[in-house]
Length: 446
Ligand SMILES: NC(=O)c1ccc[n+]([C@@H]2O[C@H](COP(=O)([O-])OP(=O)(O)OC[C@H]3O[C@@H](n4cnc5c(N)ncnc54)[C@H](O)[C@@H]3O)[C@@H](O)[C@H]2O)c1
Image (cartoon, rainbow, N blue to C red; front, side):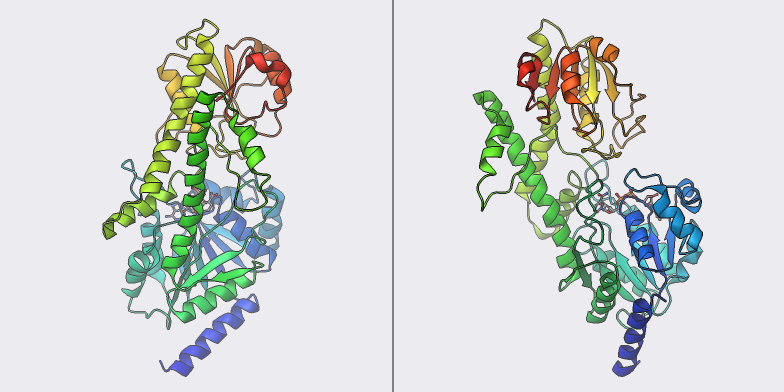
């Protein structure tokens, strides 16, 4: 194909996108994929959602949401209007002009990247790849994933990158539960394997996102996402370490952070907690440390932050043991209520939550565990843990019958003043008892 012809073909694809005639397929209807689907629908695109989980597909087809942050009405309007179709039939991957990949990227038991979901998805796309298609990876992964893993597989079809098909990487920055920043408002970093791949990808995101930030290569975009998460992981580890020191020195770390935050430059506050949780921060940094080994490089900050953050649930448990001891109670046989098992405030997601590690450690020490979480009625199975527990209703009777309540997640709908009033002892990992000085004697910060 001559250069002029290729450029014309690219312009045609962009025109198709701008006129909303390009069909968009999104693979993986989870916390990242589903908000993206809705954003495209809002802008008048025809969307085809793909997921291997047929239960999710069936729910979406009925216009029902399974994510707390997304009301069913937002989905049903587009299903009814015909703008949104969802399927588990991957032979339909030939239909969309643009395909966005939003599948999981977890770690294996040995803390190494588990790329099976990206590999399977790429294989499904490869089988149906056709001229003119734009493929974009959104899942978080190490620098090189797009060009070393996906590109060779797609090129094996004989179709040529930047001419016949287009490949890009654009990391997702979704922050579930954050009402201040919607998908539309969060700037989007976009890269392409070739300049034409970048041009088309920028044009696509430009239709749904306020600010698109083009970067020079997929590897730069892949590392951008990891930098953002490593920055958080390292800073959280730093305040967690200082929390333990401050405790030993008899200083309240939250008071110190609040005071330091008044500095108008050069300081961004991070807050300690019960350990790190969620699908991203505890996992993503290890994608980079794994890849760094290929370059004879040890990512010491990542390792250190990981070590500290993993140790925090043990610290919390030691504070619980000490607090009970101070009341002449042993951890063995103690009845403990975990308040909040979600990995962060006001979300219904307990993946990698530090609550799980804390509950497991407490159970191994012989404590009886109950939990209350308004967003998680029962605990499903997780990568490492299996609990057969249901959320207990938060009542006066419950609080009177326990030895201590442990605040792990600071959900905003819980009245902590009321909890502190009725529970015999509170272990507070989130500073929710900051203004409850009156009950100081039964509060232990951890
Ligand atoms: N959750 C977040 O806040 C967040 C934020 C930014 C980036 N990310 C990244 O985005 C990616 C997706 O995360 P998520 O939280 O949306 O995960 P998720 O588990 O909520 O959703 C993933 C979906 O993909 C489906 N799936 C799995 N394998 C598939 C396959 N082969 N084909 C089609 N569908 C498949 C699953 O059934 C699930 O519905 C990950 O790389 C994650 O690190 C997540």
